[in-house]
Length: 398
Image 1 (cartoon, rainbow, N blue to C red):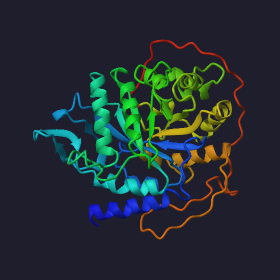
Image 2 (cartoon, one colour):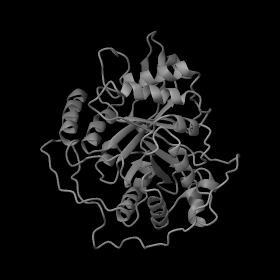
Image 3 (cartoon, rainbow, N blue to C red):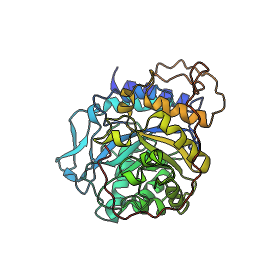
Image 4 (cartoon, one colour):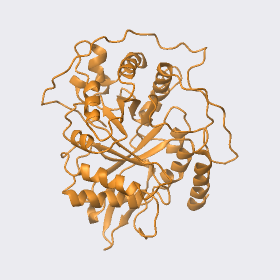
C-alpha cells in the first residue's frame, strides 16, 4: 500500500476510534508509559500499540539539537525504524534529521486509534545536545511544532519526518549539559499548542531520581508539565531498588518529587515510577531491575500515599519488556496488571470497528480468576523527610 494511502486510512481510523472506547485518562493512577525507538531488533511501533497494557509511548530520540546539528537542524535516531536518508537544509547542506521514517508515520495513527498517546522524546543518553540561549530554545520549539505538530501552509516544504501525522506532545529526557533554556522551550510549546484547539497536547519530563536533578528540576518547578517519568534506576541511593531492599532506611525520592511538583505551575502533574523492563535494559540492570513481586508493594505504598499525583509506571524500554516474558506475559503486561489490581478500572464494553487498521479490542484488563494475583505485602509505615547528598554516581540509563 502506498505511504500516502496508508496514512489516509490510518488517520481516518484514528478519528473514528479515538473518541470511542479507547479513551485516555491523563489523571489516571494506572497509566503505563513505555519508551520505544531504541530496542535491539525492535518490532514496529504498531506491534506494541496492539497491546492493551500501554497508554503512553514516548518515541526516542531527537538526540541532537539545532545548535549542535549539521546544517542547523536537529538530529534524530529511532533505531531500525528509519532509513539513513536525511533532509537537506535551505542551502543544500545534509543534516542529521532522518527523512524516511515511513514505518513510524504509518504506525502512529494506528496507535492513536487505539487510544495511545505518542510523544516525541528529546535528549536521551547521548551528550550531543544543548540549548545555547533562550532564542535557541524558542526557535527549536517552533521547529518541533512545525515538523511534528499539525501541518500548516506556513510551514511549507520544510521537514515533516512523519508526513502529515501529528504527535500528541513532547517528552524531555534531558540527561546532559544543564537546564539552560528548557523553561523557555516548554513555555513556547505550550503557546504553540493553543493554535490547535482540536487536539489535547501533553508535555512530559524524565529526570534522574535525585530531586535536585541538574537538568530538569528547574524546568519542572517553573513550567507546566503533565507527566513526570522519574528514572528510579540510575542512581542507587534514590532508586526503587534501594526502597525494595530496605524501605525503612531507603532514600527513595518519590515523596521529594511530589514536593517538587507541588511547587510547580501544575501541582496536579502525574508522577510515574520509572523502572527497567529487563535485566539487560542497561549495563547494570541486574542491580536496578525489580521483579513484579517487588514492584507491587512499592506501587501500592505510593499510590495510596499520593493518590492525587501518582500516575502509574514508566518502563524503559518496549523491546526489553517484550523480551522479558514471565509466565507467558511481558514485563509491561505484568506492570499493567499490578496497577489494575491496586486500582481496578470501571468495566468497559467491547468495541469493534469495520476499519482495516489494526486497533485492538478493548476489554477489562485485570487478571482472570484463573490467574493468581500477586501476594499482598505490608505497606511501609515510614514517612520521613530525607536530606540528599549533592554528589551522585550515575550510570547510562539507556
